[in-house]
Image (cartoon, rainbow, N blue to C red; front, side, top):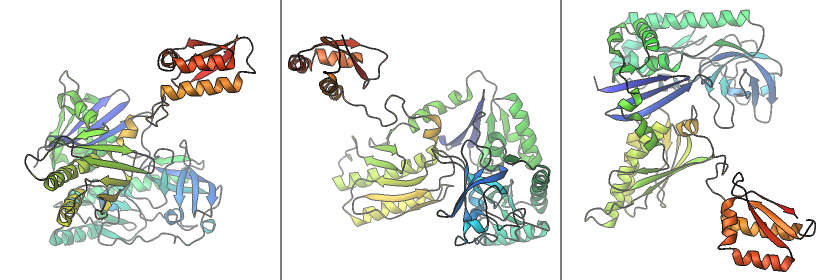
Amino acid sequence: MSNNTIVISVDVGEVRVGLIENGNLAELYLERERDRSPVGNIYLGKVTRVLPGMQAAFVDIGLDRAAFLHVEDVIAAGDLDKLASGDDNGDDDAKGGGDNGRKRGRVSRKTPIREVLKEGQKIVVQVSKGPISTKGARVTSHVSLPGRYAVYMPTIDHIGVSKRIGNERERRRLREVIDSCKPPTGGLIVRTVAKGLTKGGLKADVGYLVKTWDEVVARQKQRTKAPSLLYEELDVVRRTARDMFTEDVQKIIIDDAEEFERLQSFVGEFMPERVGDVELYDRGDPIMDAFGMEDEIARALSRKVPLPSGGYLIIDQAEALTAIDVNTGRFTGKGRDVEETIFQTNLEAVKEISYQLRFRNIGGLIVLDFIDMEKTSHREKVYRALLKVLKKDKAKTTAVRISELGLVEMTRKRTRESLGRTLYEPCFYCDGTGQLMSKTTVCHEILRQIRREKDSLPGFKVVVNAHPAICDMFQREEKLALQRASSRYARQIVLQARKDYHLEQFDLSGQ
């Protein structure tokens, strides 16, 4: 067993989970009590709008924004209680990764949306992707319930085994075991952690999932009001034990006594042999400080990320895509030629890029701007190195070959908001642009505004209320321009510094 460790910090209203791999903070999950992620929740929703042009509908599930439902994620009318299989909400074992990737029970994308949905209709949906930025949640009628060792898909006769289990003999064994455990209705996918598991362990897990689904169906029959919550996904502490506490993780350390007892109870129910690997941290220092994780979080979320050799990355996350630029910095190659220095920097950047994408949970379209390499062999080696490290990422990734300009276009499956956008918000001062109008520009804008309003302002003085830095600029660098404006318009211009004003804010009045 490796020395990987899961560290859980339970604070007031917030829980943070860090996965430490080989001494490095590899993943960070955060859940706040006030805005807990709805991913995995099952709702009785109400269709509010049907959009034939988009082949989609908006469904009210009780969140701030209506959820998006595409026609392919709908079950034909009359069969809404018989939910088909679908996504595993981000888990790699249930994304078509079994022995049969074809999903049955889906409505064709060519089927007119109005034939299967109408406004005001009630429908059972599961959140497959949480709200991201300005977009609402993505939902599906194809429910899947993940357990520790298997994923249960109601009313589908599909049996699958995770592709991450590469041993064919073990795959056949697990298929035989799951066939014998299969309930009368529904399908199952065996998860990666089930490797080597006995029939008894799988049977208990399947029984738990079937019971959970029966409870969802019972609640649906009892509740007539929509929107209504039918099933809530596990909180981040128990979800961590279910999905991340694999044989690669040596132990879980948690710093809250109450949550420690709940976690031990949960682990004891599903994997009793590992109860002793759950530890309570009871020392004085905050657990994140003790493991050096706070500093790592700050370093990993900065725009400029240093590379060991002296090079660095610049990471800019925009609305449409994320751009990552590679620079040599002070790395000169220690006697190597320029091409070799560039090649080594790019190879080093590949490892850091993979880490940053995973840690920050950056998804969507990503453009990597490697330093231009003249040799085709170097470009090929860097590309292969990139594909190799991306294979370790649980999120689905695709990448095209390095172009002549040194660019790589790639995508990474987006299932939740990125860490940066979770921990930070746009600057209220610059409105998230990262730029402000220069003080000189503001000064000249004020002079233009005086010209526009000079005839409508009463008195012989024009009072300029502006930020102190603008007033200071007028008294120094732009003093001559102010004097010439005063002479041209035959008005005395009086500066009034206002500390409460934005740098770009000003107003005029006459005296």
